[in-house]
Image 1 (cartoon, rainbow, N blue to C red):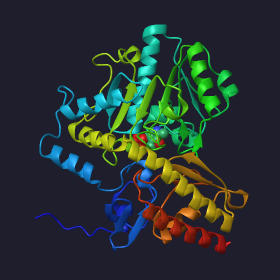
Image 2 (image 1 turned 60 degrees about the vertical axis):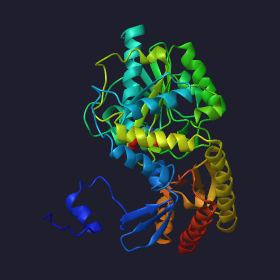
Image 3 (image 1 turned 135 degrees about the vertical axis):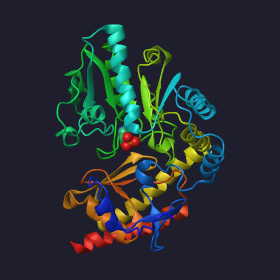
Image 4 (image 1 turned 120 degrees about the vertical axis):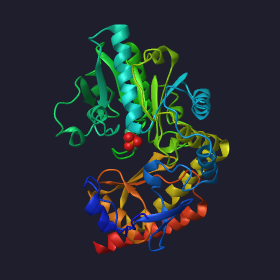
Length: 406
Ligand SMILES: *Cc1c(COP(=O)(O)O)cnc(C)c1O
């Protein structure tokens, strides 16, 4: 018989590598935007993982897709293709700029594929001199060595030996800083339409349009990392649709699987053809389970009801946050779009986002931070009005706690 293990938070420190510092409570069950811990205490979920649980916990359509695929076929390898992957790819192509899709298991892997494709395309078409990648300070693209190097936080990429080269960083929303770096040696400009981990910083229309023009002038690919902003998060299927600026490569993950690991890289025929047979691959990428769930996510999210609902929920979030701020004066602004919002702490509360997060947890609300100065909300796209109100009541108590503690 299997040995019985007593599971407590202290077990984490005994058996897990210490690269995370999880909260003390251990969740055991979720339904919609509610989560219960081992003690049976109930939490309102304004975090959604980190912008992952796009349809809340255990959405019936996703549970059903997962269970029915689980009874049919789990794994084949990419020596064979499978029906869910082909259906999902068809739908992604049908509803975006893209003609072709590559599946991975995570955001970092989707970006890794995107960066490798950009480099390979540049080498094939323009030769060895064209290999520079321009990205932005504060950007986040994942934790593999290439993606932390492209990401704009040295603290994530330092301390692991020599980094992949020819990567440079400009300043987000500053077109002049890109003009100073871009040239015919640039193979790609990589950006998030809304910087997520960097603090929920939306690209301005002029910036994104300007980047597109610069990329066209210098024959560089525009890679949009929509791992956090994609699949309905901003009220459009992908955030680039808010700007009417088209990428050459787009990456998706997080919300795409609604909690099941999957990543995708989307591109056009002209670039896709450079990933010839054998140039790139993944054991699990495009596996039937992940693709079946993601297909159900896409079918559910990509409807006027859900996408327009995101816009309405954003209004409610902003109203409640503004009302809290009128009473307690803690935020300088609320930024972001749809169900990806950042409440930016004012002068007085600089560096204290984590205090608000911990106070929220005391009141059984799951929220997030994005850096030291921003409280981030990334709930389910279908969170109910009641759950928003209940969560905001709790958040108000949390804010009062921090303010009153001085
Ligand atoms: C989370 C995130 C990633 C990394 O995704 P993983 O699935 O953790 O590898 C990449 N880019 C952005 C913008 C993200 O928010």
